[in-house]
Image (cartoon, rainbow, N blue to C red; front, side, top):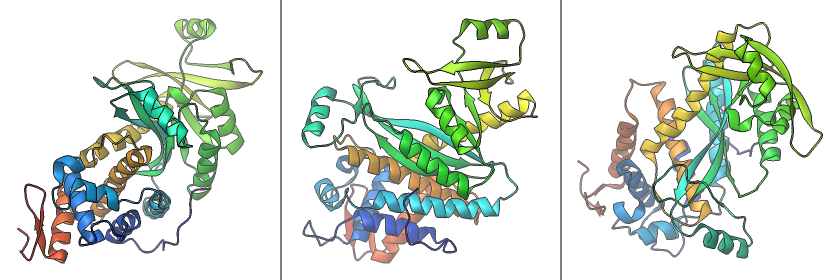
Length: 368
């Protein structure tokens, strides 16, 4: 089950959610205590707005102070996921007539350095190896940190619900099943969407066990299936087998073309729907891709070798993106960067300070 948190479903104060997330993430200990947690949050948000790392965007408090005050082993991830669930339940009720989808995909952050050396160090610390060997086409990158994300989407709003930092060779199957089981219960009649990377026997077996509707893009590998498509078949069945095991699953695959005449092969258990309708449903999966793309505009860049720091930065970007979307439900449309600027101005007013262009918090002055 997704982590639970004592939050009130009727309390939609997104400022409170933001503040609580940062408060949980920051210590009030001996590390430069002249800065309150609100001031540390302010400087972090300033870095986010400028798309700068601590080293680039912070002078006072210093980058080291920001790192020291972060409590990466606290329960900020649990709070994030509980808050996302809370906001999603609200949106699901508000847009009850919309078609809702649970999308599953991966996002990555690039690693530049000695990948094998870092993995060896992490393993020596009793941790998992977290730097994967592919580079995601980023020039100079030697590997990636990998994150599995489940999101709830409709035409009105897109919300990440859960995120997992995936280790090298780690099976995330149990985690994914537990999360989906709970989300299907919380958001009935949603359809699972996934790209071809999830077109595996174990994944389809899990979906059938969960008794949920799904649309999964599938690669066309078998010669007999290619022949069926070449002969004009727009729907066919075949047994997908798992390599080196006796596991197999019977799939129904539909063939459909988009407006640019590109062919899609989609495994689905949805019946009595036209192929173009199923394709239109599947293309809603791009909402999850757009979550990753849009949240990049409020990312907290880091080159940290610490996997938890990587996870914190990705989670923070997803949090700010989601809070912005909910804010727009009750206000005139405004940009994501404007949203961050308004938060910074509000905190500056509260603390009676400004942030200079050089990244210094100055007190006893009115904000611009």
